[in-house]
Every structure is written in structure tokens, then in C-alpha cells.
Image 1 (cartoon, rainbow, N blue to C red):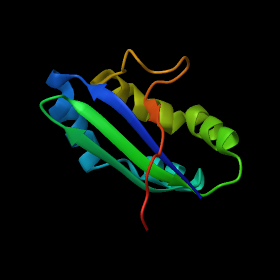
Image 2 (image 1 turned 90 degrees about the horizontal axis):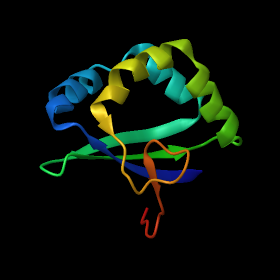
Image 3 (image 1 turned 135 degrees about the vertical axis):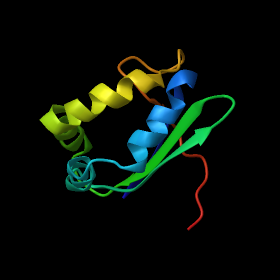
Image 4 (image 1 turned 60 degrees about the horizontal axis):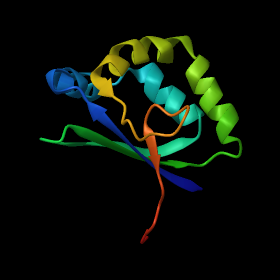
Length: 109
């Protein structure tokens, strides 16, 4: 199992829409996340900085294949057409990242 954390901004005028979307995530998206071996997925919002912090656990054996499967899924592409306009990537993110990935420096079970 691998824990992951990520950070992105959210457009201030899109916060209510982002919350609305995530209050009723489409069942197909929830199923896809599970089929891609992601568990304990949580997104937190920090205002007034308008930052989203996401964390999850990856329970699979081929993260690249699972993320490729997720990125290619037609229903997920439709979902992203609603969520991506709400997001504001950090300027400091690495090449190829949308959400800026974070290093785990402490964990207690």
C-alpha cells in the first residue's frame, strides 16, 4: 500500500460548484476509482487560501497502468470536463503534474 498526497488551487468563484459536484460524485466515477485500486480517497478544502488537499491510498501493483486506465475512461473524461475548470494548478508543480504531488514525511497508524 502506498499513501499519496496532492495539492491544487481552486478558483474562488468555482468553490460552490466544486463542493456541489463532490457532494454527489457520479457512481461510475466512484466505481472507477475503486477499480483503479485507490482507497481512502479524501479531498479537503482550505479557505481563504482556496487550496484543495487530496489524499488516498494506492493498493494496486501497477500505478501507471491504473492511472492510465482512469485517464482513458470516457465517463471520467466527462467528469473532468466539470471539475478541471474549477481547479487552479500551482505554479510550482512538476512538469506533467496537474495536482502537485506531495512527499510524505510522517504517518502514524
